[in-house]
Image (cartoon, rainbow, N blue to C red; front, side, top):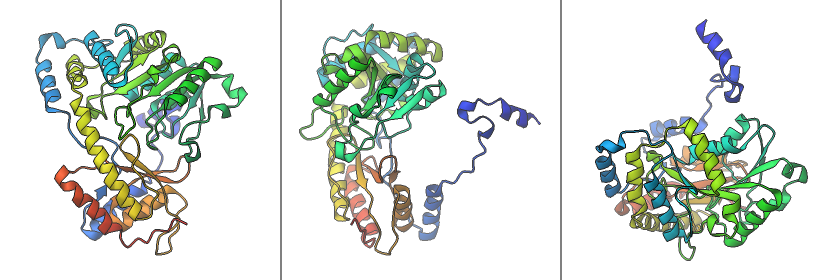
Length: 408
């Protein structure tokens, strides 16, 4: 009896009376188990979103030391100033962002996911529209819906270099729009945005009185001639928006939950006001360890070298199979159109179908992306030591050599 009335108490925003009642039909999870049991062979996971490495030893050592300091035992509230100062110095050194005030234009966050949700709480009223230039169901989208806002999705298509067509937003949508979300370098596409696009975003935001949130979680991971670029280096950007940087990808600190927002002082103030109600700040020792990371650029340099090498090799392996694969300019994913069919006659219309087929036949796991076309995302964050990487590429070749994939 108790369970039945508790079910009725649940909020509609999480499903209400339907919450927890949907049957779990995760075909990929079932296929993984079936493959291992039927072949007695391990899986080859190329779907990982999180970095494969641990945090730097100096960062880990800093956490251990700071955790034992008496002054770090208290709540951090809206963070420690020293972390914001380190963040400002990091943005200046790595991205040439000048003149940020650590006290008024930067605030720490307990990861990007929390930051996005809290920014929605700071900005969205019922009926407001979020312009979402993202293929993922991020926490900004979810929280906007929970608050009674609406989401207008801007497609990211290869013919437009995976950049949103801002001019395609209907006038009636713009009239209610309050917030534009962008994220470059982009996950899952690997696309980068240049200064010309960011200038267009600033102009568009000013013309339509929009706030801009730029998720720059992959911004430090660029390759070859592509330089790291911050939205905040664009004239006028600080007047319209904020940029979120995470220590997860560039510093292998995903589980540490540490990020920061920087930019417009009023937006940072509003963000901090929401944080004061919804969290008590990240543990000071973690913030101080984050300072160690931000002050050590060689961490990111080593990570970039690894992903650069892996992406080059993965692109060659998948190109040999017939995929239109080339190393991206940033991030650590390949974003590849799926084949039309396999040599055994099986045809594919959706990426989910191909990903399941690939898993069943080879034990290779990729991430299906059916949000705008049919693509797979291949991750360079597979778990292997550098000396073991060549064996991974050869194993992919061996397992996939008889698939006979058809792309026309």
